[in-house]
Amino acid sequence: MPRGAARLLDLPEYPLGRLPERKRQLIARGADVIDLGAGDADLAPPRVAVERLAEAAALPAMSRYGFGLGLMEYREAISRFMQRRFCLAFDPLREVVPLIGSKEGISHVALAYVEEGDVAIIPEPGYLAYVGGSLLAQGDPYRCVLKPEKQFLVDLDDIPDDVLGRAKILYLNYPNNPTAAVAPMSYLEHVVALCREHDILLVYDNAYSEMAYDGYRPPSIFEVEGARDVAIEFHSMSKTYNMTGWRCGWAVGASELIAPLAKVKLFVDTGAFMAVQAACASALDASESFVPGNLAVFRERRDAAVAAFRDNGFACESPVATMYLWIALPDGVPGAEFAELLMEEEGVIVLPGSSFGAGGEGFFRVSFVTSPERIREAAARAGRVLARMTAGARP
Image (tube, rainbow, N blue to C red; front, side, top):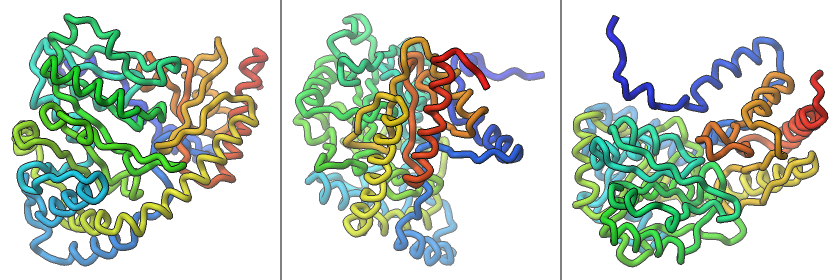
């Protein structure tokens, strides 16, 4: 029987891969399941996007191949959004690449830049598309552990010179998944300077650029002088617009830097459904009328989650961005065991920190993707499991 490629053996288990089946089994058993695992909110996408999708899907031309060009209207909406939000100009034809979700582009960019033996610098814990894309490109991942005492920033000064000399890509993601950390401009300036010095491509994952609270406004990496020489920035329709299943995102950057990604995509896909691209264009153009109200819902859920988990014995910070809490466990409480017991005994799904890489051990991630009432109930159940584990008891 033919065997899969050896490089597949290096891929870690994907944390969300088995959860849908586990969740189905729990529900079949009659469990009251509260799913705080995936960053996949129970909220509706923008009405304007739904209406535009229905309209566009009825047009035969929208069912044709989009190819790499895709729908020009979507490219132009992306360009308008970047100008409106960040005061940055990108040519919609030469400096924008439509994606089938940002995850797809983040994975494929490694195929465009990384060769066997090249290093990809990866934050850990981190989004597994970084390590997955690097390994599939036969690169050598160098994992930088994100530590609370360093505000969960990649410690650039800790990276050995020989690693920097072999590095082709540095993945960076702020606001950060899973830690919810944010990066000051002074830090981003240091990152850009390092990438320019060592000729490293900076893959800046900005999927949570619009999901911020308390007056914080996440920047684009291109607000840093010199970033256009070394960076590609990735954005997503998924989180901000409650459109995770629609699979649409984009990359922007200098034409010379994004052209290799666009070339890879010519050989692996023929573009997202153009009716979806039309809907996303309408959503982007209506962002000011939709995003503030959507964020108000997430802010309420954040506040409920922080208060509830603190009240039930957990230590966590109130994040100024993303849709996650990154919660520390007491010493001696393994994250994977805690998450497994919480799911099996109490029907609550969270992700152990180690599912984002070994550097995430000692934490677990909560997504505030359901109502405050359900989040409070999940926190109470989590507190019961923690109490049993720290007391050495089992039901």
